[in-house]
Length: 368
Image (cartoon, rainbow, N blue to C red; front, top):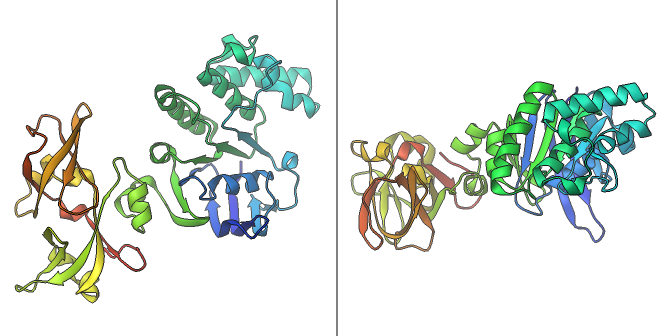
């Protein structure tokens, strides 16, 4: 196995369209790195440049110590799993798994051994004689992953492999790919637009937007300490609540976040970080689970947000509340399902401010 190093890499298409803009990223040996972001952010283009399916406009990519900019895809020691499975419909599962090895002139005994090993790992041994049309979507995706496994590459690349599966199968395949990573101790780079996949699968996450890297860190660090407003709103389900307002100092000398309809007194511990933003526009962010949760409601002296319940979405153990705070921004609270609330009711919700965030209105970067 080997790590992957991306150094100042850009991809510019005809007409000057810049899909990737001078990004640098180091993927460690045996790491599971997830590239996540909305459509058009450059994540798949980055993966395809690593695979050699897209030419690099500028910069350098290395696998281990070898620079691969001009190395043909077949010689890069990578294996790629595609969104649409890319199986040969006229070949059996066995032949699909072994076809790449056959092209590389592997002995039949070696092909048979590797195919059966991969089939055992993925639980598709009973399907080896079937053709793809006789398989479910999840089974086809296992075959696509198995075709990568038999290669025993230095790096596995996954390009949104679960997007064609139903919700239940996606959950199952997420777990299977994560177990596969642990079992193979392989370097894996996984592209998705689904931040739940990113949070549950990655050792680290690289969040991208408009061809630029926004933040690279562990899932929990990105969730707890988003670098900017985009990351804060993109990572998390439901997303973080974002409000525009002003940072003012009240008559008691306390810092307060103020909108047209409500004010939130801010912790004194924030003062060293925020005092230079006094009397300026700022952005306040707080996650749904920190509004009206049991922990927030039990917090002595916690500030209160008064809002009308517009919509209730029961989710089983918890309920999502869509709140009308009097400003245009969407506000969602995630509360215990047994809390007795009604649509149309105006309620005071306590806020857990030690998990809240303040962002610079101009740069949208996190202040505290």
